[in-house]
Image (cartoon, rainbow, N blue to C red; front, top):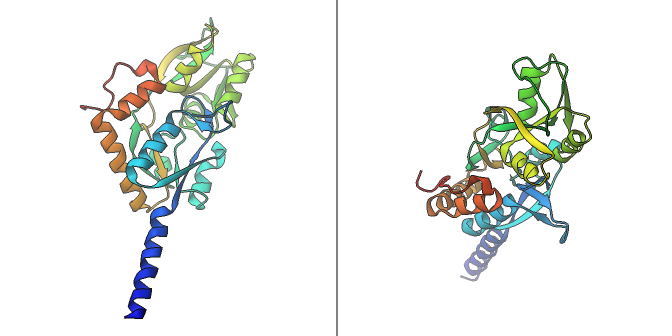
Length: 253
């Protein structure tokens, strides 16, 4: 009996440890309003930080948000240095070869070209231009495939560095997702604008997971589904992306 009691206690302790285990969520911390480092606190903030907190609460897990450079964010997930990615990462077939995704928590949103105010570009016959993109993104792949032969494609480690070169006149345009671009333009005092055609790539943004992590994926998918149904995901999106108002984005669809 004593041995059984010891064994049962050990199992309870192990169960308690499993329940208390922390899920580490990686974000870039350099892609506002999706994720960024708050100047006042020095901590990650933004849409995905708020969303991660709510998803973890609903999934019944403790979560810790960590930052990681974009170009190594997938390799470090695969290596086990954290458990999930929430970094404005679009769901693509290419990425699915390496990692799994939850359902999307942000709908497919066309990528757009951002230029300095008054810049004229003929996208039907674009040639000899410098186009900036963040390296390793779906936008980088699109530009290289469609315009790379006749133009200079400049890749940057962060979107902010691409933006800095655009403002400095070192690139003629940058291609990035619509949510990021619209937020930047809103704060540019009219210095920047969107030009040219929308570029529809990617299947929305989801949580990146290691292959085969069905338990965590199931919990997060259930939490995302519940937020879609009760309208709280719509509300959070509109809080951080006001141009998406009035919705509904997911609720009722």
